[in-house]
Amino acid sequence: MTQAGGFTFDLCKRNEFLEARGMKGPGFTKTGTTIAGVIFKDGVVLGADTRSTAGTTVADKNCEKIHYIAPNIYCCGAGTAADTENVTGMVASQLELHRLATGTQSRVITAMTLLKSHLFRYQGHVSAALVLGGVDFRGPHLFTVYPHGSTDSLPFCTMGSGSLNAMAVFEAGYKDDMSKEEAMELVARAIRSGVLNDLGSGSNVDLCVITKEGVEYKRNYEYLQGKTYERQFPQRFAAGSVPVVRERVYDIRRAVAVVEGEPMEMEG
Image (cartoon, rainbow, N blue to C red):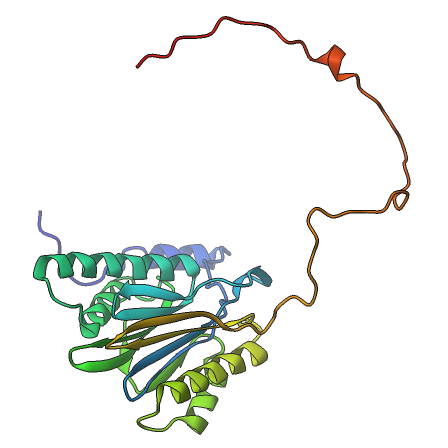
C-alpha cells in the first residue's frame, strides 16, 4: 500500500458540521516567554527568561529555556514546554547519531533543517518557537524557527510574547563586530526588558555563550527576583504562641506489639 503525498482534509466538513451545531473547537493556549540571540565577533550569545506559566499561574519561577542540541549548538524555546523540550531532545539525539556515524562536528544548518522539517509536518500544531544558535567550521550562525516551519537567518533575533520589548533593545543597541562582553550585556538587557514589561515573562536571565573554543552556560546570569527573606527550617515557634484547643495522649506501649520471628535465609 503506497502512501499518497499532500494534505488530507477529510475531517474539515465534520468539523464545520459540529461547529454549526454549537460545539466549540479546541483553541490555542496563551504562552509567555522572552528569548533572544545575537551574533558577535567570535560567536553567538543566546538568552532567555526563566518563568514558566500554566494559564494565569506561575508554575515555575526558575525553569531552563535554553536547550542542548549539540556540543556546539544550543536552542532557546518558546511555546508549550513539552513541545520545546521534546522537539529539541529529538533533534539532539539525531545529531548525536550522525556525529557517531560520521565522526564530524554537527552543523548548525543541519539542526535547523531537522527542526523546520519536523515542525512543518504538523502545520503549527506543535507549539515550539525556537531561536537556534551555534558555531561550526563556517562560523557563527543564528536562526529563528517558527512553529509552522518557516525560518530566518539574522544577526539578532527575538521570539516569544516579550519579543517586541527585546527587539526594541536590539535595534537601539546592536552593532557589527561586538565583543563578547558587549553582546552579553546587550542580550541581558533585551531579556530584562521582556521580564519587566511582559506579563508572560519573568524571574531571572539565563545566557549561553557559544564560541569555537566551547560553550559557557551562565545559569541565572542576572537574578532579578530573588527572595528578600530567608526561611528557617524547621520553623520554630515560641512556647505559648499558639493556643492549645484539645489534647490527647496515647500510650504507644499498648498500641504496638513486638513479635519475635525466625530469621530468613536469603538466596545467593
